[in-house]
Length: 143
Image 1: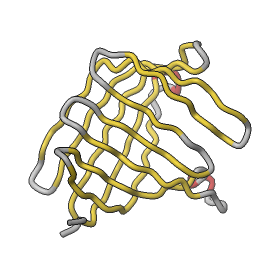
Image 2: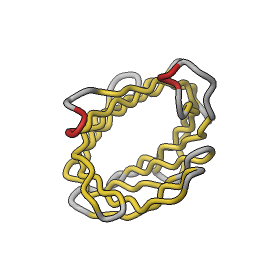
Image 3: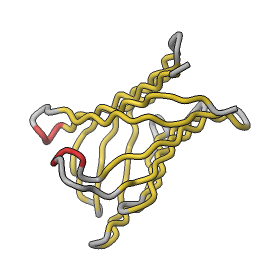
């Protein structure tokens, strides 16, 4: 059974001077084979207030890992596993980049109306360190 949810993803990158970026969207959540799936849409240029391309996103939450899958104007499949390195690719209309993630922290916190995921990871693009990231994902049932 699908449930309507509000998803909030707030990220802080160490190289951006501590500025945070937040995306808030409505989506649907369902469970299958002990995994939680949340599908939602986001704009690739929503901050500018101009027309933007829509990216269909899926958050897959497993007991020991989290996956973020994006399809549309930008495509990626990032996997976060605590104390592990994972490699994926980020495709844009301008080309493809190799993305490596070393996840230092992956924490699940369950709440009355949903859950929260805290991620702390190092991000490399094309084998060059880009930043250290902290991401706070909150999923709340609309029911």
